[in-house]
Length: 340
Ligand SMILES: [Zn+2]
Image 1 (tube, rainbow, N blue to C red):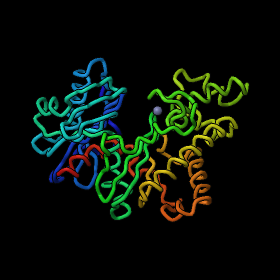
Image 2 (image 1 turned 90 degrees about the horizontal axis):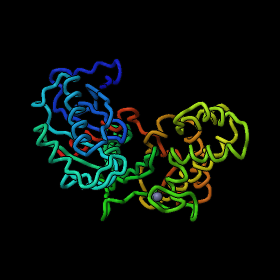
Image 3 (image 1 turned 60 degrees about the horizontal axis):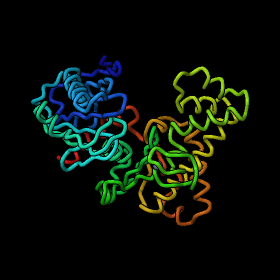
Image 4 (image 1 turned 30 degrees about the vertical axis):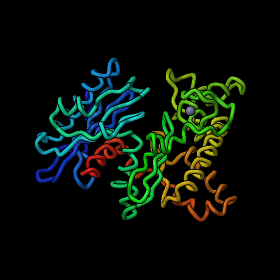
């Protein structure tokens, strides 16, 4: 069941220096790898997340860590710690998964359980917080020679942002700072999984794009988008991207609207935090494409209208994540590196 990630040499070279394990725990897959001080990833593995019961999920996480060590040919005695990025609300101080809808978790003592099972120190954080640290340490932050102020906006099944302020992750009083995905952008709009209507997430996250496509094709009649959706048993936002790239008007319209809402979010985040850059990450921001173009167009429009926005953020400093496929593993590894 464990898939080696790619043909890239996976064995950690002798004398690679201090090593940590980074684990990205998702609702469907767990990705793990061994990471050195320069951000090189060895022994990448992916395995399915068993969400039947919290103990089963913890067991699949432990199996992922063991498999990554095996693939990198590294003994646990060379590992200084394990970092875990987990979706939902997390208590990083005590290492508890407080609430995760994707994993079906409530008050799960992740750190305690894994430390007992593996005999390695573990650090647990919200996955978007971890990605923000990873981007600062190994990604755009490193490319730009270090960043003190960075906003990371994750676009995928959910939408959330996190901010690094003066070199430190800002969590807020309840650990909810940056949950802009649940800010209401269209009062009375589509129902969000949080129970409110018209949240940014219900307008522009992956499932929202698919839902809009499914609702609107019925009104529009035959289209390329309809053909692609009909062919797919489990449609994803990538189909809407594909239809837009191939010139489908309805798909382009859906993405233009989502891009405009996301640009509004970037504008608000920039004015609130005055960052050096805003990094776009997550599954919907892996490559340049029609959604990113729509966001960039929207950002340019806000910049045209708002002198304050122009002053705090040149539209050119909205960037895609530099970490790509390794973002989750490197973000989780950064938790240990930053702590150490
Ligand atoms: Zn919501």
